Every structure is written in C-alpha cells, then in structure tokens.
Image 1 (cartoon, rainbow, N blue to C red):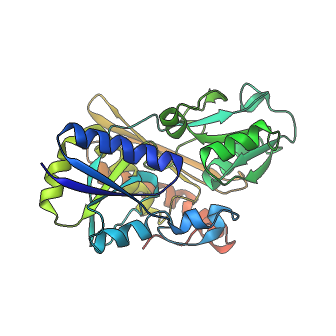
Image 2 (image 1 turned 30 degrees about the horizontal axis):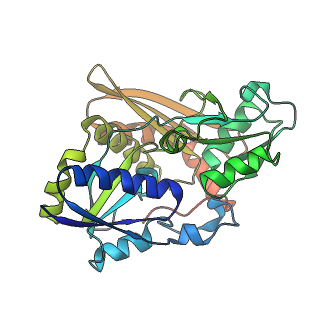
Image 3 (image 1 turned 135 degrees about the vertical axis):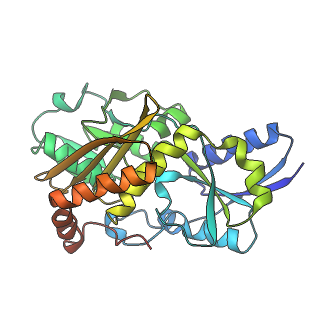
Length: 311
C-alpha cells in the first residue's frame, strides 16, 4: 500500500473535499497525509473574483507543490482548474458528480420571481449575474466573497435579500437550510465542471494514476470534458459569463452552452447532442461565437469585467 500526500486549499469546502478523497483512499489501505496550501484566491478576499485578473488563482500554489514533489496529488473543484493544464500536470480522476446546478438561498423569499423590485442579491459570479439580470433587470447585484459560512451569515444578517450558490458545496457541507429553489439549468446554466472534483497529479506519474483510477467516473469525465472543451473554445476562465451543462441522455451527451453579457442584455444559448465530448463542446462553442458570442466576450474583456484568457 502507498503513502500519498494530498495538497488542498484550506477552506471548509476544500477540506471536506480533500478529506472525502482521503477517506476513499484509506479504505483502499493507503496511508494519506494532507498539506493545506494557501492560494492567491484565498489571499484576495475583498475584490470581486472577476476583477482580480489572476490565472489559476485557486490552483497555482498547489501545482507548485506538485512540481516540487511536496504532494503527490491535488484535490480541486474542477471548475477552478484551467481548461488547459500546463504540460507538467494531468487530471488522473474526475469523481462522481454532485448536483451541478445553482441554488437560490433566502431567508424570506421562495424563489427568484418572488423577490421584490430592487432586491439586493449577492453572487461572486458574472455568469450568475448575467442570467439573473436577464430574468430580473430590476435587481441590484452585489459581489459576494468569502467561504460558504461567511456568505450564509451575510444573508442571515440581512445584508442581502438572496444569494446564489452552487448546490454541490451546500450539499457536501450539509448547509442546505436556506436553499429555497434549485434553479433549473435552462434558467441558470451552471459553470463548466461545477459539482465535480478533479484529482490532479504530475504528468506521467503512472503509479499514482493507477492508484487513483477507481475514483474516475465515466459519466462525470465525459460531461465535464465536454463542458471544458466549450469553455476552452470560448477562451474563458471560470469567472467569465459562460455557462456549460452537459448530461448523459440515452448514451449520448446533451450540452447546453451559454454566453451572456454581465448586464443581462445579451444572452445566447445553444443546445446540441453528440457522442464525442470534445468535438461536441467545440462545435457548440463555435456556434455561440458565430452567433455573436465573440462580440459579447470582446466587450466583456474590454470593459475589464473578467479574467484574461486561460494560459
């Protein structure tokens, strides 16, 4: 049996994810150690994510630990991983996916439609902001940073009438008390890879890859690969107003793609089915660009809303 060192961020959710993988590996008889690594994204907490402008802001320092052989594997929320990894790394496993949808959380209100005119809504994501504004242009959207507990506390204290979070994180932490609505993907398309964990290792580390093979889920691998191919085609990071949601339907992949302007005035959606995850993602991405997504993204980048392209 092997001794495996896991690198992880130190947030409550990141540690839940790392301990979850640790438990699965220990059940296989391995010895597991955990190293907590503070990333750029963890250090910058007072600026909206889309304004930070740092590539791999939640992964860079963890990847450095991999290169320096301080850890053997890293556990990431897959949506935080750049769509194109540096040649030093590979994704050894993508675990069975949690619910990838977004959820509406509120103390007083049952759903988005029930919010009063001019209600204050918190979200850390331009993608969510764009889709909210398309539905309800009267809403006042505010940047929301901090860990899950911090965000929920701000909601409970009355700073916001509602906040939008990922279902997966709340489900994993068992903090679903304020979830009022699971938002359908056709109403709010999730981020590429949302709800999945990506296990990153050094490229060519065959021994570790073999030990992690049991964690790799076929459906999660296919659907998230498709979503990430779309994101890559559009040149976007996880903070750009791009959505991608793929499901296995009758043995085929159905992909819903979205490009939107942050103010909600322009929203493009495209749905298509296929068998090859990468080809399907690229085709939907190409279609969105040809329908005007290129103009939207140029405007977004030009206005400084979003992160620069992935490396």
